[in-house]
Amino acid sequence: MPLPPTLSADQRQAALEKATAVRKQRAEIKDRLKMGSVSLKDLLDQGQSDEVIGKMKVLDVLKSLPGLGAVKARRVMEEVGISDTRRVQGLGEQQRRKLFETLS
Image (tube, rainbow, N blue to C red; front, side, top):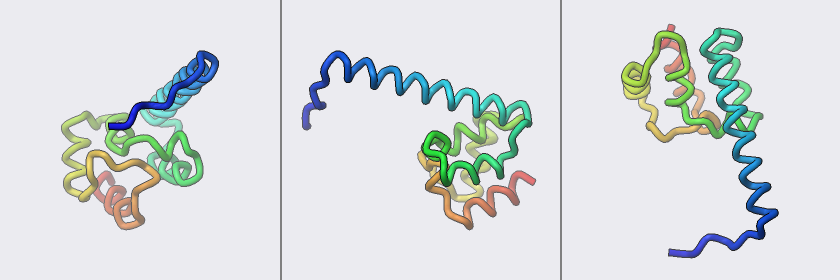
């Protein structure tokens, strides 16, 4: 197994700050989805161009929807045929369409 790259203290600190900022952005996005200020369709559309949204797991996004918990989100993904590890930017057009149909 290859060793991770060696980073200087400054590089390590910059990486930690970047990771913290991304986690904070994702939490805010999930809160907006939960509050209803952004729709699932809008979020998935943004995920095609926004790297932060695009790299979110679809399961995490679905769990943030009001009325959908972890179990229901997994069932929906299973019905649609989406892997648990699929990310927003990796969704195909058919998967998106089936997802909207299932959740409507």
